[in-house]
Amino acid sequence: MENALPPSKNQPSLAPKSRHRPSQKRGLFFIAGAVIIAMALAVTACTGGLTPRTNLTGEWSTSVTLSVGGSSGPGKLILEQDGSKVNGTLLFDSGTLLDLKGTITGKTIQLDNDSGFADMKFHYQMTGTVTDDFTSMQGKVIVNGVQDLADGKPTSMEGPSGTWSATHTS
Image 1 (tube, one colour):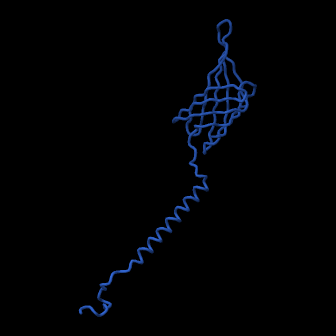
Image 2 (image 1 turned 135 degrees about the vertical axis):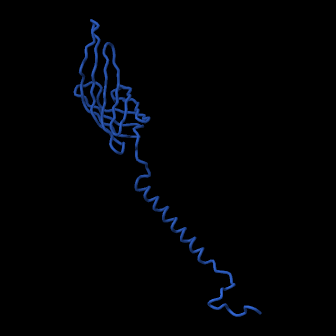
């Protein structure tokens, strides 16, 4: 019988190799994968699972304070952003509704409205700054107007100025 003696140190064994090491590696990969998934879930839970806002689209709780009455007070601002263009509506709790058109450049926003009644036309201009996380904004508002008098000559009117702020709600 050939090879009846066990192999020497310099002679390779003909016996099949043990498969214990690969299953240990699979176990380590499983544990490492489970740890990575657990860490990812923990990070997601700590950050609330939300991606940061980078857009003004949505509903905002707003407050406008003018130096002289007019369209001011609390309300709801609904905005839609497409690139640098911003459109929306501002509905005051008093019932006054303003359609807004504007722009955003970086963190600077400008919203405008042209409206009026009878022989008066008004231009509302809201300018302000958006916070880095796009969850709030604030700025100044200016209202100017033109009144068409009976003699046909329009008269410019400098309206009230004030401040505005808004907080994202949804």
